[in-house]
Length: 193
Image (cartoon, rainbow, N blue to C red; front, side, top):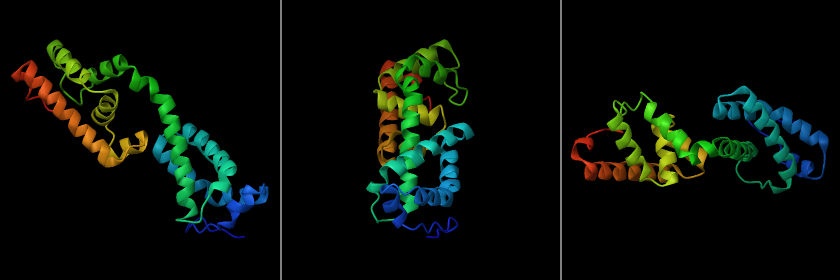
């Protein structure tokens, strides 16, 4: 059973053998794919240690879930999906406090020069009020895009939402904030987010 990691041709029978407890098949799959899976995780985490930890977790999941593999698409696609799910779980756990603890995120957002909306105390208060009308998911999407600089596609990967849903929620957030600012005082409505 020879695999070729260069063109991602992986013998799909390996998954069946792994499901039956074949250590040799698992070793073969690992060595044929680990560099690509690691590269994929590194591109997501931007951190070597996190990527290494997630690589280990990914292969544990692949080994334990080999019986779930179905012959559709490519094995590498399925394995990358497992890796992405490990990354998303990691991000949810790591960033849960950041998304839920609004005070911490709000303080960071207000101090971020990229936005250039916190030029005065008044602007900080106005921004805080405008952001407070968003629900948790809208706030998270807004912060991830404006503060952290993530693209809508990246936010979709992190949150498990579709890219269209992320864009829709982001645009809805902007509209809500604009309406709020216009109601609070027309002179703030011109601020761009």
